[in-house]
Image (cartoon, helix red, strand yellow):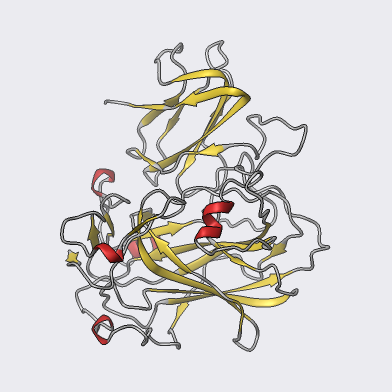
Length: 395
């Protein structure tokens, strides 16, 4: 295992866990909606950093090889009354007061190296205080400036300035391609890294999916045409790697005119249109918990806010709804038509409106292979509230 001792350029800031832009826009489809390969980072390391941060390769270290997938145009409403992520995304300089269109995408960062990448607890004693940041937008610590995004035209020029995205490094899932190559081992769910004990095991990847706050490029002023998303990771070499030459991913996209037909709703956290109530089938009006919950793949799990059912799990006030999805899903009732990717499941595992004859919700489901799930809740009426609890089989 690779332990990263306190580094003068190592940091954490809080990272996103849910997203709230509206759900319709004059869409876009990707020229290639599959995952990208990677290529050499011709820009080289960030030489503006002090020389001691330009670390040489570590032959026994991790090797982060980024991939991009599932690009999709979505609208953006710069209004805190309609978008509860706007303030924090504005504070983190992901958007401006004039942002109205963004290009969302997934970024996967698999560890293809011989060693684990281990950061440990962000608040561990001895960590340089100046290099960690707790973001109120994301509500947990992240490694500062882990990824950088921008949009390139056909000549390779930057047409939409990207931002440096901070990440919580964790084991989202086993990488099937790396597993087939014999890289890494299957790690029990209880031993996988998470936001409280950060890292990426060899053979696993960290997933930042498109629905997360700031997981986009602002394309408000980008004209229609063919472009490339570029994602670069660890450009400052704050994380030791066995190879720094494969830290760039590119993905071709086509941005269509704003007059194009809008794609299907893809953001369940967006506000519902006036006069429309949230239901089990709707993909609007939901709220997401800040972080994913863990479970053992294949075990039975009950999530509820209903103290009257058997088993009694959680409690609620008023009329509530629940939806559960795997942590690597966008958590839609239905998979979208445009921008969908066969490699990214989007449907909910389970949902419920009224359980056991009450107005409160409860669902029982099988833990997904990823070993993590997210809980979405909704309420009918301003006084309604869902207080979620979880019951796992055998515990």
